Length: 440
Image 1 (cartoon, rainbow, N blue to C red):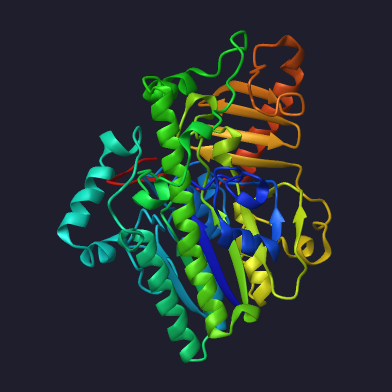
Image 2: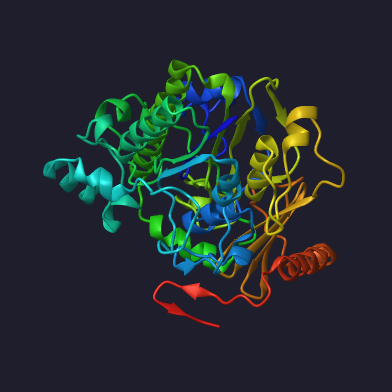
């Protein structure tokens, strides 16, 4: 079997038209969902790009592989899924937004197709427009139509290069792992004009916000909210329209690669996995982007299409680190001892996970950590237990019960479990490596 991983950036778990989202236009991903096992409760190991992607690559929690922010580098000796498949003779492609923070380290893949290569193919006026859209003053708080065509986005280059590499492997009779990682719908939220104008902004329903008498979120959340506090309702709708325009755009790029599998006659010989590194707030809790432990940021989509396996849904708590051992089990590769995830193959094939399945998932960005069970969530900031949510009664995370005396025992129990997880899964003797310097 071949393995094709299609990965988006900032793609919310619910941003699919097949799930009833009225703003999402995703016919190609809907088509994939029709033949896939969909894991409804999958969580990212970090609500930010580099840590999430390194956890996917290594099957290890963020603090265990070393990359806990976009500035940290992995611990020495990083062992990836590409290394695991090398003894089987697989071609190992990686292209698009991989976000390796140590480009000198061996990642097990063949040479990467990068954004710099895409820029070399673009005329100056297109790059000038892209750089304006991508400027820090523009991309985080504005959105709108772009004069660029859909062929002038990085995602189109990633799709065409992915197809080229797959065609090359097929022509040579080689099996492959292709990790095709699109940056879209990551900001800037400036899709092509014809796509942007398809969204009727007057019909966008803005997310509900906590009632005025709700306990406040943590101070760090309130500081984040300030970045978008100046936006008018019109500007908020523009941001949401721009985001869902980018969702529409990347759906087309995913469709290009999926169509190539059909054209090459290898669809029934290829496992297709689709996920995203993290989600996007889309004005939930008065925020955009990610960098927090709200559901909109850490809850991620996961579709796995295994030829010959019936489509369906699975509800167990899953984590991104589970993909590494799942791929190994599908292909008959050895699962390294370093991997901390658990294979999803029993659930894919039989409908239920393996015995003793987890009852909690974990995520981390910097010194912010989360433990989430089916019914509860505790967020820790530094050494402070800062937010506790009873998700059974409060699925929108409006009522922070950290100061509620009746919740003290649950907070204590979850904190003890989170601390134990941190200790049990740490890489002993490892040192943090931040880009530009090393600290103990």
